Length: 89
Image (tube, rainbow, N blue to C red):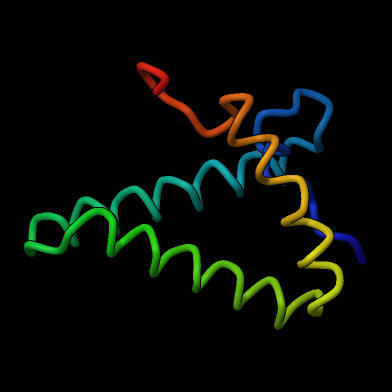
């Protein structure tokens, strides 16, 4: 089974239940970041930990090769602003 694209939660053609689940999950992650920051954790440390946890989960679920293929698209998505909110650097 291939990994769903990370921007699938924004895809209007995606099945509603999958998009809704991803939006709810993203809310949980945002809440965890806010709680960690309130406890004094650096947002950079939280981001690195979240990325590690996410990649580990994807590898456990889909395997190394599928996860590697999925992550190959990330540099271009970052450069194109897919993860940018607010002012771009």
